[in-house]
Length: 332
Ligand code: TRP
Image (cartoon, rainbow, N blue to C red):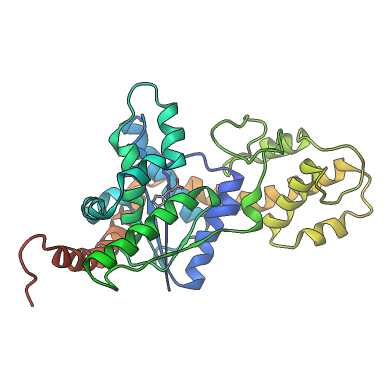
């Protein structure tokens, strides 16, 4: 089985990204052939700083490696290094409906947020995303609930492409949504998901936060009325802390509740979750610092990954061009 995922090159990954997505990528190395792409081309669809994009891409590569991706066991690369993505994006446009792109929620939200220019890139974002996955004929895409529309579009485009140009040319991929850990909530406003945009600094826990920052944020985390340490609908704050502790340690939330059944109050819960997160993230942060220093090594890792990615994507593109009547007939 081939598993493909794309990750935005933003430097500051938070605990929700880590538990919901990054750890899922690391696990996908066990389940099949994992292909991980840092999507620098997607990052150019909104206002951005070129020099910063390059830095953020390396930050992201270092975080992924620090979290446990092994370049020998997966393919980790930068989208912009493999030109097949942009070529396939264009070719897929022939079977993509403008109306569908126009209706995408992320396009609507992001275009409303742009101050200067709503780029055409923003509209085509989902087509490039479809090309990312379809170029590798991947079977599975492990990404969050927020990507549902993009995944559906991708499946539609693949299906329509096959119907128009030849059955079996592209693989229609499955969406795999991470479970429990995807629900990490803001520590200050547990009604909302933890997020880099819109959350407060206090409520957002970053993978690279120092232990004392982690402790401080948990100490100030919002809890609920009552004293019982159990998950409940009317206890969003407490539920979040229990689920975070469980996810970081890789145990069931029931186990955390059982351990804390005789605790004196929410202070004990905060201490327990804070301890678990510090323990879980410290090795990642330490490895990150080491890896991030050596930019030449990071670039070499990405270049080697791109080489292997290109070898796969090239085959798909040759089939697609042939089927579409683009370029000369294929030499046999
Ligand atoms: N749009 C995805 C996000 O914002 C990133 C992404 C780009 C992606 N290409 C992809 C995810 C391909 C999965 C597969 O998170």
